[in-house]
Length: 84
Image (cartoon, rainbow, N blue to C red; front, side, top):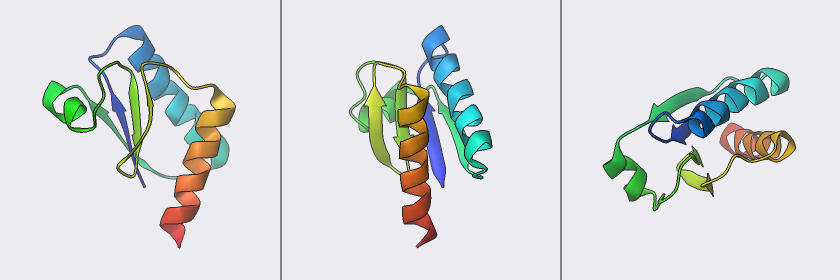
């Protein structure tokens, strides 16, 4: 599973990245987490506001930090899909 956190490195981007790692640890899921700071890459996903969250190529959020329960649900759903 591949999770991308999109953003230039602002506080919210760093918080989302930390939350992703915490959710993965809580769920005991192994995933590749990539920090994307390249504006061209971000715009290729249609992300206009950061932070952005992309899981397995699908954009899940843009311009906000999802609450932990929602983040964990998204990660778990994508993990189950990729396990099949």
